[in-house]
Image (cartoon, rainbow, N blue to C red; front, side, top):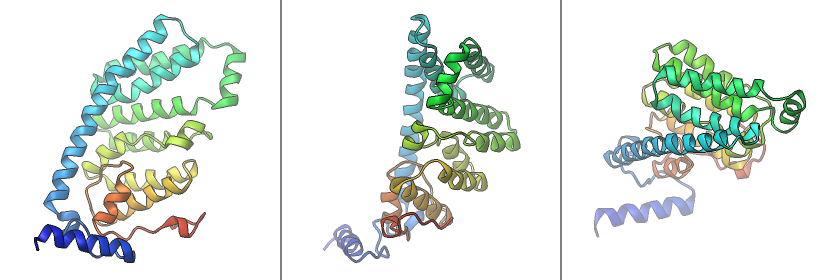
Length: 245
């Protein structure tokens, strides 16, 4: 029987018994196959974000030229800024951030109140905060970058962020570059607004992977990969509402 088949059987047995000793990656986090997988995934994610840089710019340009609802213009521009901050010249990003506030200043008092009733512009504030953190990081100011990153999740309750979670683009880069402490702090802090079974599973998987010094893509599939690496990730469905943080 070939080794691949033997490992496959051991993985199946581990899943049945709830024991992750026999993981898919024989060498765990140091397995070359896992490293190859992560390198490809990170390259794919960067390419995806570069595509989104273009698509979000088109969305913003169309809504601005059509003189759409100001909320839509602000939302479209703030989504674009997250990607602009990764790839475009810093001066360009700063101009786009300033433009967000120019649009906000044009809102009437009644429009501003309406915005506060729904979301308090929390999602837009989060996007701008992430962009500012990216700018500081690209300029080499780590202290300012880490402060801006955490400030980006000092937000009011946001239906969008509560449902879909915070931006993880800079977290992905920071961890790849070896800045573990701010990543851990950010992950734990998301518990304040990003709650539920799946977010909790993701936080546990990420923290377990960080503890084991694994490479991470910071994506939903990490819960699967943590098990495949043989890491002890708790089943939060057995202890609803509880946390180890």
